[in-house]
Image (tube, rainbow, N blue to C red; front, side, top):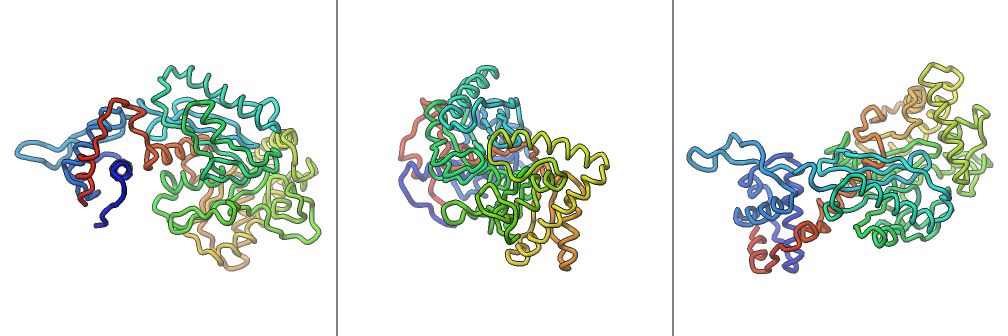
Length: 418
């Protein structure tokens, strides 16, 4: 076993994190098994779990078939579902929504929202914070029972300090989303690129559980991606990893919103389907165009699902273009799973196009589609990101839930006997 080192406070937080993650992995587990799996003493486990029960995070549940003594069955511990919460927010072109979720990641309440002027970052964040305040009030829950907010946004995000570096479609540059919202709401806020949020949610809680090497491609109006290698998110230089939509593929092609010509976005995305159908010119470069094209794409998806051959052919063509690129990426990176998500990926002919392109290269892609995806809304994935950041990590602030808790260093040093 590895012996943890650090200050008493950091050791205390890490031990608590290990216990919480162990319970998450088992859903229900008794204290004796917790001690065995975490390497902590039974005394430490008793103390940690008692605090978590008093804080309303854990509760005692069913009896274990194993016995802790003559005639006594061990009591299992589970998460108390509807006592502590997180908020998830998705701020994207296609979906703008906030949800309240419990400790099991189950959505308790949902609120779609609109914004008056998305180009104005200051006004937009003020509107969002006001809506979150009203949303919390409507749920009739105490604010201190909310662990924090997971915030998903399309763009390049510095997840360390919660700053949006750039979002071409919004026209935002260097906006400290996390700092601004945290100050306005009095809550912790974790800001992340929405593709990364989807990938992490599905890898930790959803269809890609136990998969360490995952490639995600989200297909909406544009294309976005995310990569996990050995279970860790690949962020790349300046947090720019995953920009698959801006891979140049067509010489002197159509102008992309990024300012370059011939990006994959222009031949393999929802915008390319609209252009092929002569419904729009890709890609949108303003919030209003995003809204208009989103409405057009909703109609296109409806037509495709109802057998419109013209739309199906356009979707197949776009999917085929993506499939050619994915074939190369698969050969280079060898992921266990390629997860395609987003509204356009729900069109069967689009997926058929991906598979067809790969087959022509004698490649069978390990493809997961929206049918496999567990969390259908990005906002719910954002809530799960909030859980990961503010409960299942050392950032969890137990004292916010029970401010009178004792935090004596001496007892915590005994917790490090691994």
